[in-house]
Image (tube, rainbow over all chains, first blue to last red; front, side, top):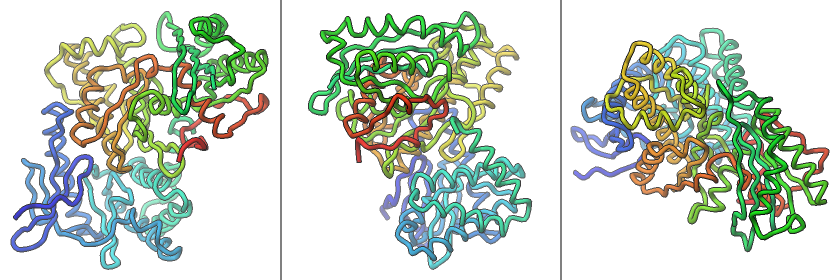
Length: 207
Length: 331
């Protein structure tokens, strides 16, 4: 069947396809003509491998992600479950206050759960979250990694903070709600993570 | 309306004169003088001394090469920040003195936003770009979103120019080192793996800098190290720019800053843009580097949209962030 492009991101194409009779999504990392082959090949293979590993582990610890059906390292393709939900980026600004607050807390809880298992998503933005049957799914672990470092966990949250500032700037309480959810569920010392976020903000240029 | 702008955030002092006619930007003059440290990087006080010595002559020269006279100037603008304190204060002092002397209003502007606005003002078809702003100190991906110029990605440690300069200095190259590294890199061919550090849309260069220096210490071919360094850092820059374009759904990319002179970086960003079906823009070189014309143009836009600044409120701000600017001149 012909594959329909659902979304063309910066590094990958998201295609609607079928796999053993199911409707699936293929995430296909595209070669980038602007960078040399050596960098391109290495990035595509390592990111595909890492992403599949992190998705599988996230699911195991109870953070919703699409189910993986197949991984093709050579071509940089992950075949996964299709979620016919809404991107949080698209709906957050139009939700009611209470619902928005609840989702933001849920985002924080899920990030805490990932961090409890030393999983770093690497690109936590509201574009990378899908709400499907009232469940919050994380997608795109392409820049993720595993680490115990507090610093990296704080950077993970800082990325989301910047996304909120740029995309949902009229709702300044959103990120605080995320942090509330995070604090309640993070098993390490959440205060240390939050302090490190402050350090990162201060380290940023001209703060 | 005619505006004279004074730029002095770092190692360059610049004076530019801009004329606005029916919304179009015309550069009447754009004079720049650059402080060259005898050794090492920029010494802020030495740079400020350089600027103080040159600024009066530059102002006269920038007016002399045009057909206008001081009495034709309607507005004086200056780089209010971000930048090195002593340099900013020198430029601001000159701007205040000039404004009082010719009895014309004064306005301070954000240097980073000026880099973007001069692109919109002088490059045909450039209307709503994502700016990849790459200079010594600054490495930011900036775009207009929700009424402000917002930083979508930036360096978490040092600027790309600073990274190249630090590396070059270890090799004994003269400041600025970027052009020399570009020449060496053009002769390199073997890629040596370097850390590729992207966090969301932010990037970090310090690990890569150390790894590059270690390659040199180990006796690797210098041209190959320069080649690998350029390929890696520029691929990172191009990637975050593309991510910002995808995130903001914008169809234009603009380069700015001194490192925008690098041909390989231009080529990479242009290739990325072409493959996305987006447009690629670079202002002329004298409008890419730190210059007075861009300061003049932004000052003019702000003034025409109703911004006013008294001398009392014209203090410089070394940490003047891009997203602190109230954008009154566009929707």
